[in-house]
Image 1 (cartoon, one colour):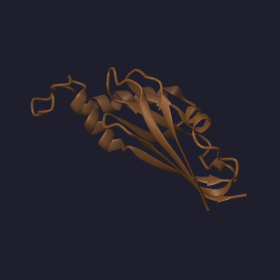
Image 2 (cartoon, helix red, strand yellow):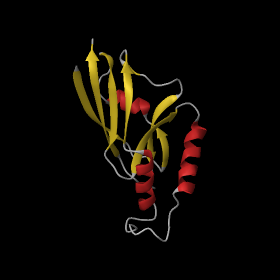
Image 3 (cartoon, helix red, strand yellow):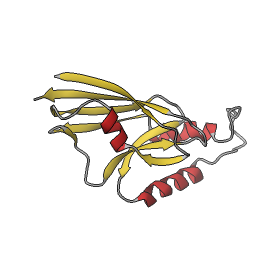
Image 4 (cartoon, helix red, strand yellow):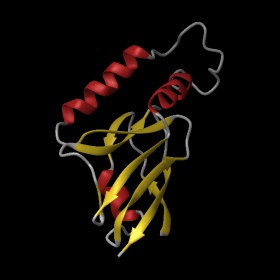
Length: 142
């Protein structure tokens, strides 16, 4: 069994849902030696999140952003954490709803995604800045 880990820095993105599978796989640990295992991805932020979803139709990412903006609106009178701007508290809520980590099985040196699956960086701030993601692979190597 072997462990590999890298930290991947993702360039700043505008608010929205962004497909980052290729960036994570290119900059993360080398996977081709893993016969079986797990790929774990963790974002080190409280106002952005990760999820696995549709990797082919960009409309899904736009629909996700619009839905979450309706579901968790800005400027609610009951928000107390408002000093960092109207997008900050909703960003924390969205990150908690979607989560800060995910795991994908490794199979024959590749993540075992379904046909239309990819990793999204969900940027919930208007100006969130660069994001740091810890990518860990664990499993049996050839």
